[in-house]
Length: 68
Image (cartoon, rainbow, N blue to C red; front, top):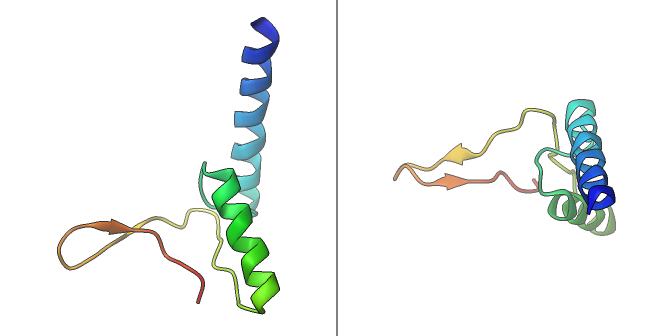
């Protein structure tokens, strides 16, 4: 169990580093990487930038910015 907790801490630290470097934008690693892969496959520009926050719609709902 101690090894599992240590691995989880390392994973969280690695994700924080990736966010800080601008490689991903959130703590949803698989989703962000999937968007990057899809952007490259379809030739679209990825919008993953460090600090990119969810947008608020006119009704006050949050939505995540997507590929442009």
